Image (cartoon, rainbow, N blue to C red; front, side, top):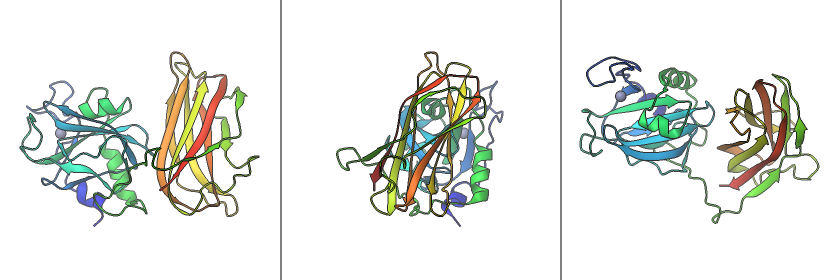
Length: 296
Ligand SMILES: [Zn+2]
């Protein structure tokens, strides 16, 4: 049985359930799975810890960015949470299930996992601030795929992104910049292999931590785009799984987006990032776009 199956095999209280412990209007602000004190809470997507805090009713709470699914996963009643900045691959542990006296001030009884889904922020997911969404369908999907990361080394094995002073990152600028007036559905492709002689993206094969940054303007309120990131092997055409993030326009139109993930890579792979407009008719200027590689 995989870590994922072990962790999410006992659904208890569904999202929106009504009962004396829960909000009379909204109901249960998350989905509960049964588990025992000290058992690992397993990430069902590749995730980065963006927030760890404490709540009177929920004990230690966490908010994590879901790297391939988008949005933010929240967890409550957590013991030994992984620190902010940790990258946790699917199938790895992000913390442990707290028992009755582990989370000071919690109102609940009985060890279990309480998890939420927010499309707004890691903070909202952690504290169960509305609007919230039901995480269960996503967990069901992950269980069906039952695809644990090839690099997952079992419960509690975590890869933490190296600090900049530990490892000098290798920075590759994307080649395509400038003004762009896309129609809905049109894609701007950026890749790092043209013109710079840096086809060999990663210094050696193995696990690498990749962060891609895209800065653009103007994507105003009402506009939306999708940023997709993947590896492509130019010779064989082989592609990695896609990482998709939805980018919403802002009041000032300035957008800063980052995707971080870790993968086993071969030196001949290149990084491809696509920006696709899915709403609105913005005039976009890419003010900066790069990919940073930390050999792990
Ligand atoms: Zn709950």
